[in-house]
Image 1 (cartoon, rainbow, N blue to C red):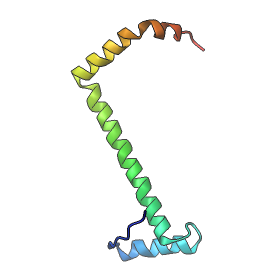
Image 2: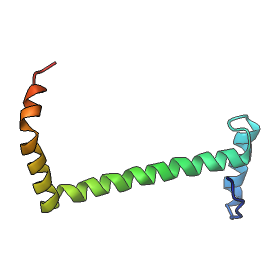
Image 3: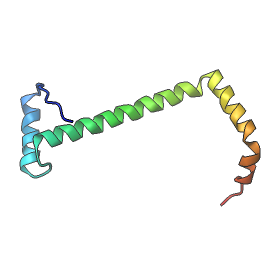
Image 4: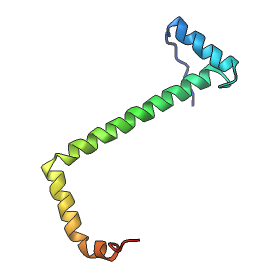
Length: 84
């Protein structure tokens, strides 16, 4: 479901967007803006995941849990430890 929104962009940016659409880079201004926002949100989400992983790497409780999992699965891991 789509939702209409209104926002302001610098004139130069809009000129560049219109030019890209006119050149056939995208089929419409809406598509270009939607795809650009989707790409930006995906990038931000990847940064957030990376930051969460870095925090987890410093968290003693998380590290202890990982250590317990490694210990619990040590026998299974040995089965897969042969180099390919």
